[in-house]
Image 1 (tube, rainbow, N blue to C red):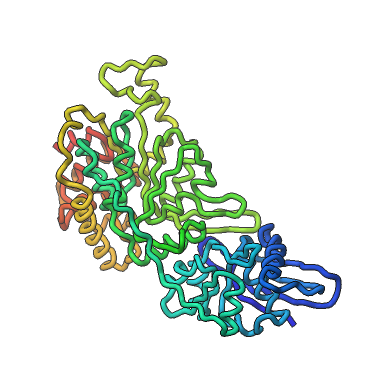
Image 2: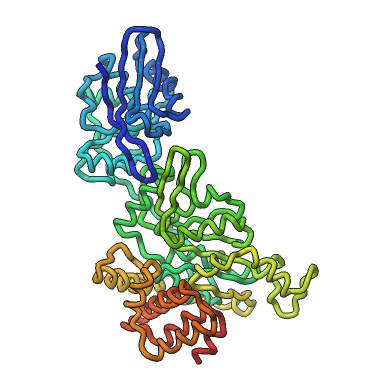
Length: 512
C-alpha cells in the first residue's frame, strides 16, 4: 500500500499539484526517487535519511520507492524533502497515515531534522487554499503563508520532532500571523536634490503615469540621485499588485522572514548583467530582474554600457507586460510590467556637450554618435520622456534645501493615480492602474483632445516623424500631465509639454 502526501511543483508563478507516493516493500535495500526529478530532489534521499536518524528514527532495511506524480512534469527544488520524509514516516507507522490528509506540504530538511526555508511558499499557500487544503511549511515561512488566507489551516514547525508532536497531540503549534516588513526611516527624499527643477518635474510626471524615463547628462549631474528617489513618490501597491509582486519574489526566494511590504520594487542591476539575469532564464527558468521589478521600477544606470542584445531583449516585455522563458521540457511565463528608468552620459567621455570641451580622441559629434549608437532606435522609441540633466552649478549647491520634498510630490502623484484608476475602472478596465498601461484605442478615447490640441499633434507628428507608438505615447504622457493639473480634457499646453519631453526643444518652439 502506498502512502500519499500532497505537495506542489512550480511553473512560473503557478503552483501545480504533485502527489508524493511512498511505498515500502520487501526486496533489496534501496531508496529510489522517480518522477522526472532534478539533482536537488534526488539528493533529498540523503537529507531525509540523516534527518530521520537525528529525530530518533531509522529507515527500514527494505526497498523504498518514492514516486512524484505526475511523472512527466519536471520536479526541481529542495522543498520535496519534507513531503518525502513524512511519507516515509507514515509508511513505517511513525505517524498516522491520515494525519496529512487535507494538507499541502513543502520544506527543506537539515541533517539534524530542522526545517529550513524554501522558495515559493506564498504561491503554494494560495494554490492550497484554492483547493480547500491547509499547508505545512517551515516555521520561518509561516508568516509568508499566512497572507494567503485568514481561514486556512497552517502548520509551521521548527523541526520534524515538533511536527510529529503536533500531529500526535503532544504539542500544539500556534497558527503563524502575517508579517510586514518595517520600512527604513532614512529613505532618500527629493528635498536632498538642489536645482534640477525640470528633471524633478519629469520625474513627477513619470511617477504619476508609470511612464518610461531616460535621463542624459554629464557625470555628477544627479541622474542616479533622481532615480533613487523615484520610489519615495510612487503610490503604494494595491492589494492585487501586492499579491502579484509577492508571489514572484517568493518564487525567487527573496522574501526574508516571510515579511511583505507594499512598497513598489526598485531593481537596479549592474551593467554587466547577462540576458538570463535581466529577463530570466537559466537552467531552471527563474525570474529575472524585469519580473522582480513587476509593478515597480527597473533602473538601468549607464545604459549604453549594457550589452546591446540584452537591452533589445527588453523591447517585447515592455509592450506585452510578460516574459515567456522556454526550455526543451519546460516553459515558464512570468509577469513583467515594469517602469523603465535609465540614465546615461552623452558620450564615453561624458562632457561632449559642455561648452568649450574638445574630445581628445575624435570630434565631439562623432564621440556622441558612436556612444549613442549602442542604443537601438526601437528601444529609444519606448521611452516616453527623454530629458537632458545639466550639471549642477555651485550657485545651486549653496542654496538652502528646497521647501518641497517627496511627501508633497507623492500627494500629487497619488491624486493623479486615483483619477486614472477610477477612469479605467469606469470603462471596464480595472486592471489598468496608470496611463502608461492603456491600449492605444483606449488612450485615444480618454485623451479628449480639443481642436487646438488636435492641430498641434498632427503638425508635430509630421514634423518630428513620430511613429505610431510615439504618437500614442505622447497622448498618454499628455493625459498624465492633464491629470496632474486636474483637467478633464487634454489641452494644447499639455500636449506641448509632452512633446517637449518626447521630441526635444523643437517641440517647445512649435507650440509657442
